[in-house]
Length: 86
Image 1 (cartoon, rainbow, N blue to C red):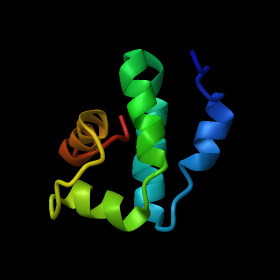
Image 2 (cartoon, helix red, strand yellow):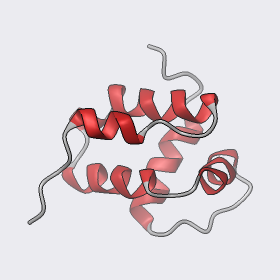
Image 3 (cartoon, rainbow, N blue to C red):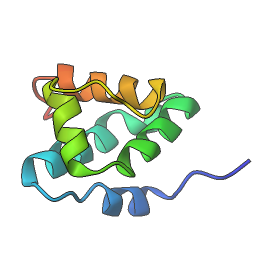
Image 4 (tube, rainbow, N blue to C red):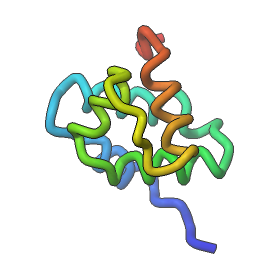
């Protein structure tokens, strides 16, 4: 089985084209990733491979053509959390 990327590499991949998306995805990594199920960790990694316009449309609820159910779960968390600051 393939090993998960190091957190530093994931943090680098959280850098997105817009500051808002960058902050949202990075905060998810910092707040939820470590305690997530292995399946959800892989889903988050797949989410990071998606294009920014897709991520924004999914998070905003404008589209629901997710690549798979795992990515949909992560987007659901991102879109339903008002603030990931705490």
